[in-house]
Structure formats: C-alpha cells, structure tokens
Length: 147
Image (cartoon, rainbow, N blue to C red; front, side):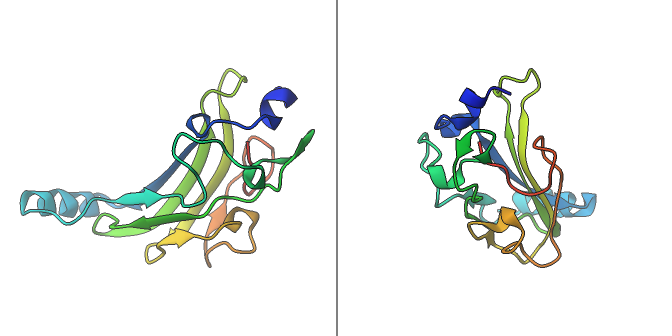
C-alpha cells in the first residue's frame, strides 16, 4: 500500500464504515413479521465524529508508516436494532485502497446487544465495550488502524 495514499486526508467515501447486527434466523423472521404488522423504526447508525462526504480528520488517521495521525477510532451511535439481535459487529473496509483487494482498517465483534454505540477510541481497546473482541486488520494487528 502506498505511503502517500495512507497519509493523505482520505475522503469519507473511501473509508467504508459499516455496522452489522448479528442475529439468529429466528430474529430475522421476527423482524419480517414485524414489518408486515407495521414495523418499528428502522435500524440507524450515525458517526458524530465524521462529516458526510467530508474528509477524515487527523485524529482518525493512522499513526505510523510515515503518517502522523492520532489513530483514534471514531465514535459511533446506533438505534432500533432488529428484534432478536444477539450482538453487533463493526467493520471498516476501504474497497478503493490501491492494493488490488482493498484494506481492512477495523474489525470489532461480540458487542453486546444492549450497547447503543462506541465512544471515540474504542478501537484502541481501552474504551471497548465489555466482552467485545477485535479482529486482525490488514495492518497485521488487532484494533483500529485509521486511513
């Protein structure tokens, strides 16, 4: 991966941030039945630290490999998970990274169902929700690795 690419201020469109609710098949079925009856509000995710169609700030940029960011994962908030949700997972993947296969920046999973968000810096481990786990990224380590 090009150091020049990794150190420039990356447009938010390049850093795809996604949160997924992990639920058993019966929860999906319950949600589908709820829609038929006039379902509740839709699952919603927000990132108060990020600006839509904006640029990632230096606080979220990787620190290393020639980059001088603070490498702090952004705060995330969510509401209205599907009925029966057992846990959440957060992934940050850049499909446009000049590697030929994209770049995984962050993988966090086993976030308890009652959790409604992540504070800034949760990807560093200290502020991660109790019981959650972090997967290995393309940096070769666990935890958040900014663009």
